[in-house]
Each structure stands twice: as structure tokens, then as C-alpha cells.
Image (cartoon, rainbow, N blue to C red; front, side, top):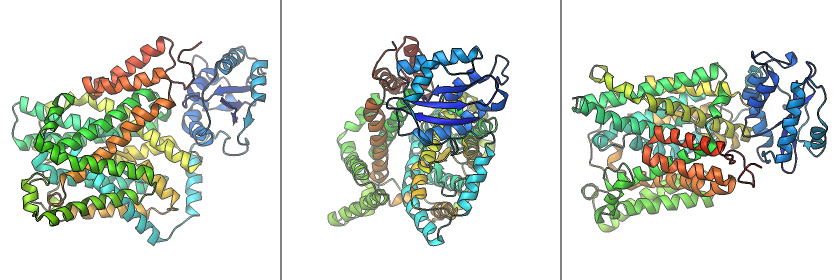
Length: 583
């Protein structure tokens, strides 16, 4: 059973050549990676048995290997079935269900207008054993190497980007005002979690240049859980800080481990393709909301106020708050446009370093001491730093209010769905850059293992950081040493005997969060408009608005419900076409 991809001016098709079993060449339109669903319908009968025994595991391979190959082969081509092609495909399917052995005249004429973009003898041949991919990758990377100096150098470069963002992520997870006095230790937990993720990815992943860290996809869910657990502990009669801290830290760690277990099951049962059933337009609205949430958290951190939604943004209009947030907003905009205009990995760490230099130069020029900067709100009130072995002091099992944890079940389910999809998209992005298929199920299991280890050590959700992974791939890194260097630097930060937050201005983290906000919101609320249909764009905007009103869990559910309603009305909500309605 071989597969050839055909590319035309306005269409791409997947041609499956079957040697026996009553089927001739089967042509499937390539639409958002959903070829597996169509293959399942055409290759299996009502009992689920293969109609064509020469193509065993066809559904598995479409979801596992085939989809990866599709993404790497035609990611720069149009993948939208026009009406005439859709009609031809439906006619072809009808003929095959009648056990016709030849393609219809319509589909044959259509295929003549298309050209193969790779030979069936290349890696477009469908593999029946997904383990082959792992063996081939291992064999390929074993023949390649780079000097230890290069691995150490790029480990340091990646660390200079990752560590500040990790710390800002810690302030997002523990965004509630209750946690402000404890951020020193809580941020250490976040950095340590990043080190655990990196060690796991560098050890288990099939990619020796992999970078895996605490990721933004799960942050909002963790933050929502933390805030809700604070309220529920107080309502349950446990207002003391030791109970709230134990319940929150252990609860988030437990949910992270459960997420990891769910991802391992997805990979073990080879369900990677089903992780992508969540509508991309709903995901787009969610990613835009992540950006908004990061921006709001950054402003609240800089202004030292507690803000949970748009209705409380009036707190930012206070004269003192405006003064405190102004440098961070300017810094975030500066970093964002610098990174977009000058596409080099050194730009972000250079901008980050520049912010600190400018801050201390201003202090020197004005004669202001660090203590005065703290009193004026530029730096957090100092908290006595604890030794590294006290990082887990808040994780006390005997202080956990266990009965409030089941209240987070719906949020946990939503987090599993979104993180699984986000991880699949990260793997797809790496796969396109690598220009060869990856074993999606193995990589998802890698993400799952990493989250279990992170959760069991008091950490938080994470996945591949595709931008850093691709950067390392492009620079020729083929050694796992780079990842271990990143983890080592993170551990060193945890071991630092003083409170690093006592010397870093709030607008430093605020600038990073504003930069993330601008990046996500601009991409998913503005740039995306030219890439989707009008109906899809309505779903993106509506999901973003629903998340503001209903919260994360119900906002996503409402976005999916809206998507299904608009789709049922006949509007094109999943295919980029010039027409807003189906004919």
C-alpha cells in the first residue's frame, strides 16, 4: 500500500494505491489532517474490519505516520478542496463502496491536472510499522555530532531566554494576591519544574536537540485552579496559609501528573490524531485569550493590584499604577517589535539584559537606592530567601484540604484536551522543519512522562518548546548535552542562596508578559483574519469573548458549541475558501 501526494494550483490530494482487495487508486482530499477519518470510512466495514487486507492498520498509519508525512510534504501548498474536487471525491467513494476496481472518469481527469510532488519510492510510502521511524531517526542522529563546546554555548543561549520567561510564568500561575508574599519559593518551584522537563525531554525524546519546558498552554488552567482553590479552602473553614499553600501546590502537582498519565494513554493507544479534533478556530480564540491573560497578569504584577477581569481594569487608571506600568508596557512593545524586525535568537536576551541595565542606570542617575525603589513599588518587598532544600516546604500532605480538589475535575479535563492539542501542534511544527515524519504517539508519550515526573516533584505542566527546538536544530545541535546544560543552569538558579526577586524590577517580568500578550493577540486576532474564512474568524472572536465572560472551561465548551451550530447552518468553518457558504 503506497501513498503519493499530488499538488495542483488550488488543490492537494492523497493518492492511496492498493494492490488488492477490490480497491483501485483511492484519492482523498488533504483537509486539516483529517484524511484518517475518511480513510477509516472507506477502508473499514461496519464491524471495523479492514475491507482491504493488504492495507492493515491503514487508519493507525494515517493518524500516526501518514499525517506527519502530509504535513512535511505539502505544508506550503493549498489544502482546500474546491467544489468540483469535493464532488469528484464523493463520486469516487460511492464507486469504491460498490467494489469498483477503477477510478471514476472524473477523478482520473482531475488527477491528470495534478503532479506528484515526490516519488512513491521516497518516504511518502506508507509504513506499516511506526517503530521504523524511531529507528531511522536514531540511526540518522547517531551518525551526526557536534562539539561539546557548541552544545554548552547554545545551552547558555537558550537558558538566557528560557529562565526569565519561566519566572514570569510562575507569577501567572500564582497570580492571586494571596500568593504574593510567597513568590520567591513558588518561582523556584517553577524553575525547578522547567529543569525536570528538560532532563526528561533530553533523555526520552527521539530528538537530541529537543527543548522542553513549562509551557503557556496550561498556564491559564493552573492559574484558574490556584485561584479557585484559595477561595474553596477559605469557604471550607481553612483560611490559614499553611492549608491553602499545601492544597494549591500539591493539587497543581497532582493535576500535572494526571495530565501526564492521560497523554501516555493517548500515545499508547495511538490516539494522537484524535487530539486534533478540537476546532482550530476555537483553539485560536483560546490562544488569543492566553495572550490577553498574560498581558493582564503583567499589568497587575507591575501595578501591585489584584485584577481578575476587564471589569476591574479601572484599577490600572490610578495615577501611581500608570507610573508603575508605563516602563513595562514600553519595554514589552520594544521587545515585541525588536524580535519581529530583527529575526535573530540573540535579540530577546539582549533586550532583556538592556532592560535591567537601563533600570539600574536610571537609579544611579537619580540617586535612588534599591531600598527606595522597593518602597516606591518598583521592586517587590524583599522576602528572606530559603535554602534550596526548603523549596518543597509548602508541599505538606497532612495540610491538604483533599475534599476541595474534585471541584477542579472539569478544568482538568479541559486542560488535558488543550495541552494534548497544543503538544500535537508543537510536534507538527518541529516535523515540518525536520522535513521527515515523526512518531506522534511516541512524542506524546514523551510529553506525558515529562509531566508525570514534573508533577511528582512538585512541578507544573510542560511540553516541547518548538521555537527553541527548531533553533537548536538549525544551529546543528545533535547532542543531548545542550539540554542537560539548560537543566543545569536552571538548577543553579534554584540553589542561589539569595532572593533574586529582591534585585529584579517588576516591570522586567511585566515587559516579558506584555511581549507574549502582543505576540499571541496580534497573531490570533489580527493576522489570522487573512488565513481563515469569515465564519471561522467569527468563531475565533466569539471564543475569545466567551472566555472573558464564562471562564476557561465553559468558554471553550461554548466555543465548540458555537462552531457546531455555525457548521450545521452550512457555513464554512473549517476550510479556507473564498466562499463563505457551501454551494
